[in-house]
Image (cartoon, rainbow, N blue to C red):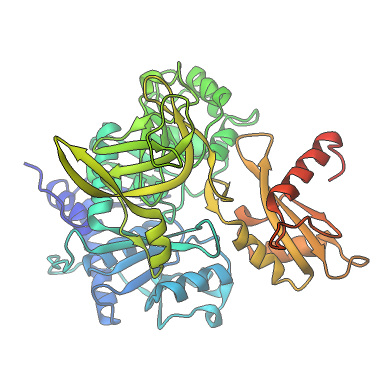
Length: 518
């Protein structure tokens, strides 16, 4: 009988005991069995404890996807610490915000990343480079994790509707519940081999690691996202499960990619989330890989995962995000708090499993997004905690959901949720601008294009190339605007603020009438 995991570290212990020689993680030419992974994680946990890591301490993992990042994650979990994955494409300002806001006492990184940013930018007590750690066999692997299921296990930093990224607090119960549910509807087993293409700092990327370990499967970390390299790994490693976001699917299905022309006999399922996959792309995937089930999913980090469309409905409803995952109810609510009928647009509200603990050090945002709703069952009335997603959806007669848009100004680039204010703040710090307004517009493919409208300090001498160069030095790729347009002034709201809606409409209208103007 399979042991029940109560904390994230228990996931690893189960398979290190029951399938110790099974390959757990592959990273290029390196790999670790489940037994090796537990041994290395315990060894590293001992190092971290000697460096002063205690239960509840926040530990930032500023590493690329690798064996070392997996080991570091489980080492932190073994000690009851709170892990924070920091995307290795972030620049100094973004990394420092996460370190400062989280109050992290320790950071684990490598020499290359530390040198690329510089020690002076790290607001943290202790920095440990994995390059300096010697992994050795440990005599006692029975570190007792002091955490319980309700304790905080992970903070994921993601952009909120305003300002800088917010830290979403996920407990061990949150992570294990979501992992169990997703593994169940994907029918994962120990025979599966999953490919890791997405950052662990993205809940969808982390989910591949957790579901793989839950099932006792093998995770293959794919560093290169060049389509031919991905295809070679799919074939060489006999990959059975493949997740991606819309932009990556578009690249894989491009005319110069071998993905649509290659048969992958072991590939049994494909998943998509992080944005709507265009219907024509869904149909092309079905035509090119008819033996692979396609799961069209929707999730918000505040609840890990919310809906999926059953693969048997993909041909008839390629634009749908399906219905609630097991142990979850999805409500579509109008602005009066009532339940919407078919084809009526309302906000998606998540009720049931996986709801996060809230936002780290932000009680106001927590109260705004994590609210309560009144329910009645068999004459008994009660209030229950829910997540108000901010996403507008509608449902058809059969209850399948369709994404309509965002209620706020949030953007999405490369599958990553992004606040306009975050980009504006960085661009304004260049010293070149009097004002800046950032918005997104539909692109040629599944992605939206980020546009920045700016009022320069010096109209006569301003060059967009200089501002682009600044952005490239201060922002990860997904934040950099596709276009910068120069304005003499902005239309204003009644309160004197730049009118985002009108600025966006002006851009769209001008671009529609004369596509060459920008």
